[in-house]
Amino acid sequence: MTLDLEQLKRELRKFARARDWDQYHSPKNLSMALAVEAGELLERFQWLTEEQSRKLDAKTLRTVEEEIADVQIYLVRLADRVGIDIGGAVRKKMRLNRSRYPARLVKGSFRKYSAYAKKGGRNR
Image (tube, rainbow, N blue to C red; front, side, top):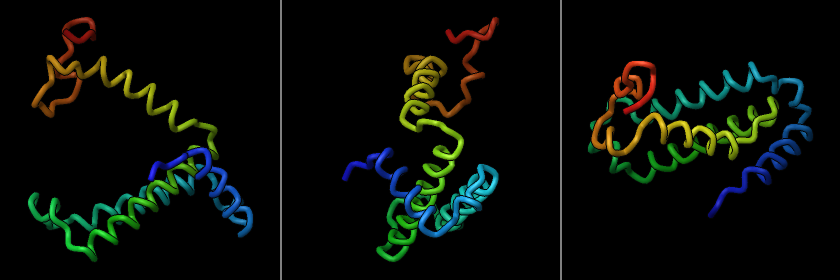
């Protein structure tokens, strides 16, 4: 199923308003809640080997699914409260990443873009 971020944003607005939660949904609080949920997602993988992290049992997978949903919910809510279009921001960031990480230079490497920059700050 494809996620419509605009529809989700409207749904989350309605959900929060019905509960009078807008008063708590400041950018500060939402960013903190997002960090907490991301931490809970990390916790599901803590101490697993690389292989185990790729083959989660059904119970763990359900929990990971819920944590990913929580992260997405808080991310959409935060973006809405500060007026950022997530789709536009992602497209803009991907253009930047394409210029920072040209496939011909970085294929198979995990290094940060600054490791590929030549003098003057431009990529080769």
